[in-house]
Image (cartoon, rainbow, N blue to C red; front, side):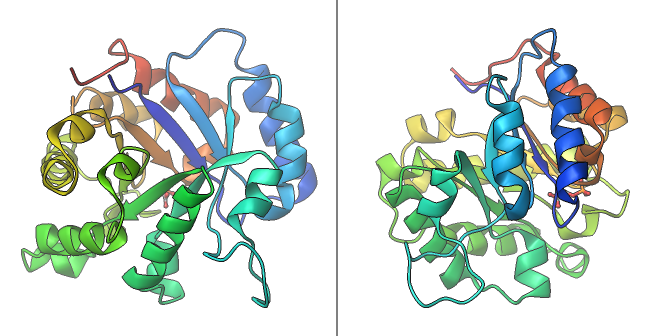
Length: 259
Ligand code: PGA
């Protein structure tokens, strides 16, 4: 059974004061249970403060990236054990902004996925095609390549601990979202690949969330697709009200999927 999950990716937004007030807004808006799991990924600098504010709430703490080594001479980097130490249990990896702005290749993302698993946290492996790749009919080739490379050398029972996020690059921060049918088609394809790489049972249990201009207005129709297990939310997660509305929509159809 797959419980819907909504993850807020705050990206490079928020001074400490802003992060505190956003976290408090989410916590205070949660007087009634939402029915979906919720995680927020603030900037590294705000992790301790946000973790403290959300400690007594059902909202989990996550991070936006990490290094593959546990420690060492890697100037400017942060490791999985450091994040776990701050309470972050979910780590985004291979986000398209890192793939495209910073040139993160699949091999490096794979090292990170394996490191995060080895340290007992949950990697959220992000995959997605560019506008040009979709136009050229390369959507499935692209995401298949990213998925296979990202999970290379990961054992079946470890794949069961991974979460996938399908984020078409052309939909991120653009206001253009994939239609529920477009997203569901890719999610179904990814699930088929997981079935092959691990097993049908692992594929049935693994959560695949959608990201790319998710807002309160479109979250409900996306969530109606049985293949879509939740959302990775960027811009709209910077408003507590919108983030909570998206989480409620993700849970609206009664929650768990799979069999
Ligand atoms: P967006 O970002 O919701 O602002 O499109 C999503 C993401 O990049 O995770």
